[in-house]
Amino acid sequence: MAKWFNALSKTREALSFGNLFSGGKISEEEIEDLEIALLKADVPASVVMELVTHMEKGFKEKDGPPRDQLAQVLIDKFGPDNGHDWQPPEGAVEPIVYLMVGVNGSGKTTTCAKLANLAKWRGLKPVLGAADTFRAAGSSQLKLWGDKIFIDTITGQQGSDAASVAYDCIDAAIAREARSVFIDTAGRMHNRGPLMEELKKMVSVIGKRVEGAPHHVWIVLDASLGQNAVTQARVFNEAVPLSGVVITKLDGSSKGGFLFSVYEELKVPVRYVGLGEGQDDLELFDPKLFVHGLLGLEDPPPPPPPAPTES
Ligand code: GDP
Image 1 (cartoon, rainbow, N blue to C red):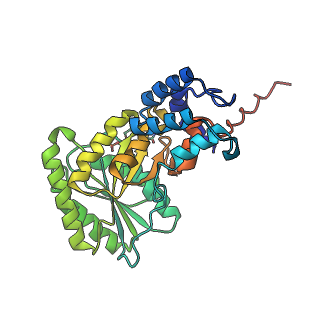
Image 2 (cartoon, rainbow, N blue to C red; image 1 turned 60 degrees about the vertical axis):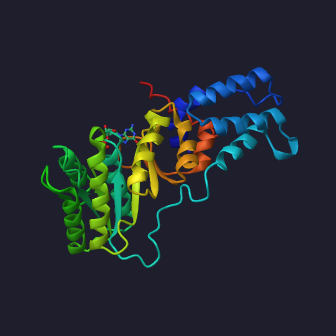
Image 3 (cartoon, helix red, strand yellow; image 1 turned 90 degrees about the vertical axis):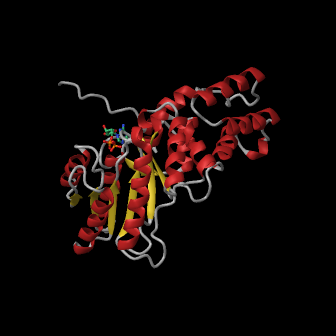
């Protein structure tokens, strides 16, 4: 898909696979170059070593072109639950509650809006909840998004208790007969201890309002941070167990290789990927499209049509 191919151009350039596999046999020097490139693109060392071993062993002709074989090794790094769409647990009581966590600037607010927009188109009437009561602009930004995509946004006062705002959001969602609620949270990392306590409290309070909620706690990770984003995720996962990851800004990152670490280290599936700033720039994570985009296996997008000439 052209969207993925375009979004991964920076990481792909960093990898510079070029025509490495077109000639069949790969020299030792080429393998070494590739090893360095993979590490630079933030592919974890364990995955790089596995690929190198494959390349050193050589590729069997009967197993298809070397690039395809290498791609399959990478695709298999993502477990079967990656990319799968979110399904509420069977018999779950609606509204289905999604708590979005992550550090400021990661793209949480934007992602909340994009997900709610998607839910709207699927007929899962959504409500947005602005539980970032720490930042002055925390709730106004989400409200702006809500107005733009015609989805109700429930906001709280700046400085008020975030857990009680989350509770009110769910109350309001129930009153509106909404089927899904996307709650944006604070992400100030300089204040880590209190933030984690606040999130824990929020999870417990939400569970008191709707049985089994929050049904999902998803962390939003900025792809331009590469491996550092995984460190962030680990801290959050210790406080509130995560059930999914959304990667943002993959379109501008040259460190897309860190996605392999997300699953390898956290065992939390990647659900969605942000490929731009617009409301529709959110794609269900697809390991095959991701790896193919990374290796340049997808056909490049067609060139734009020529500009009309003046007659
Ligand atoms: P928050 O502080 O975590 O709530 O982050 P915001 O949602 O305010 O996003 C921070 C910036 O990242 C904004 O300028 C967004 O437009 C931008 N952003 C979010 N997601 C994406 C994405 O997938 N791609 C790109 N290029 N920019 C994004």
